[in-house]
Image (cartoon, rainbow, N blue to C red):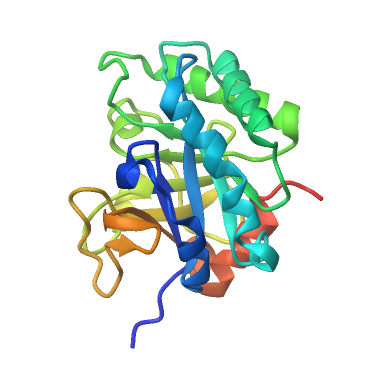
Length: 251
């Protein structure tokens, strides 16, 4: 029987019809080890229902975990970066919404999402590096916390090979394996010492993934899911330990 790596579900306001069964995800136990909620995008999102969705789900993603929170369960928030907007201002908007929702706790992860959708095709390498670095610097100064970088093709196509202030990389690749070339071309590696590859989003809604023996749906809601496997330091319990040691805020 396959021993699965810890799994984290990635959700946004339109996921699962806007309704998340976080309690069921926690209750299912290992390998389900957390949830990331989309908080902000650029300096303009969220508004209306999307904003209400985050405010309604941020606290339950912690309280339902009880004694698992920060031990074998992680609550995460992510920001979708617009490289044509100011990175510092985007970080401020991100942190303001989290504060409004109840603030950060000791078991929380922060991630910046760097993808091609909504971003300029002809952005320069310098523009991308500056925007991400400004974002992560503001996060570090304001909270003392590290940031995970989510990205693959967009930074690669623009020649970005620096961590840009990020401690871990989460790479999306919906194939049966994750060849080292996928993250090596971004300047990252799987190792015990950060910065290092932290996660592999092997499954994406609606296309699913090809990783044998791993789920394409989760207890958080019906249908396909965006699922991240924690593979840092070999995955498994070592991946959870690496996450706790390198990605959580200090008590």
